[in-house]
Length: 357
Image (cartoon, rainbow, N blue to C red; front, side):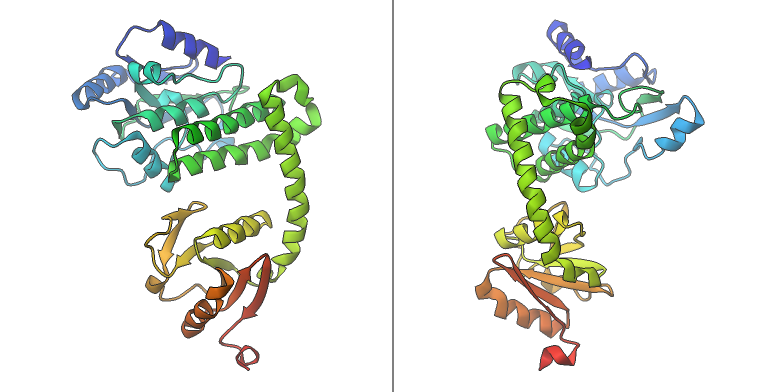
């Protein structure tokens, strides 16, 4: 598999910088010279850039038209830490793992023992994740040096297979372990781990119906897989109970959560698990609260002048704060529910006479 070849390439290489290119793809003529000059000039550990796209036929072009070839977000023309650059990519939903769109200082990889997971598909997910988080100096260059060729039956265009689940699950576990060992906690870390978990769920049915776990997982990995399945079984039971709890939200188009602490996290997890979406999070003060929750920005409630029609607020705070938050929401005329201790009460709508009595 690709991971083995790339790892042997890292071990055998002698140059100051490394670039990985698959046999069916291309780069522009000036790519290596310019990337090397930029890296030397700014003393970079990593450079990220964009791509062009070639499709073998119109059917492939139609099926993969959502491929993000060129980023459109806001990025400073400056050197950043890898962690800060990853946060920017993820905050704008433009983190896309293709090692062919990355240029690395070789010593960064060898000194930090950053290699691909061997024997699995999608090995570049963990490689790029661990490498960018280890980089002290990184940049994004708005230039499409990489030429991506979409062909039939490649890893990214073939039908789903059990090895896809195996690769994503293995990567998911490695990401969690890496973040815990390094003590990392950031938007970029959370985004990647959540993305891997989503991939695991997307390919799980194929694996469950076509594969025997003992053929794919061994040792500690098999133990982790069995723990995952047990947790999932419990969550399915809880999901059924949770769906009934949150049924009153069916009457609303937009759901906002007031709170960003433990209670709010519990409510958000249950709401998303029950199949609803969350439009945003509010807090009374940004101080001491996270900037994002579940990839949504946490906003100061005092800066919110109005909510879209059909909106409701779930006040997910401790019971001692219910009276205070209820008063705040009623003054603004926002419909709301109160949530704590696994219990949802309401709705309370200041605009309805029956709720005022």
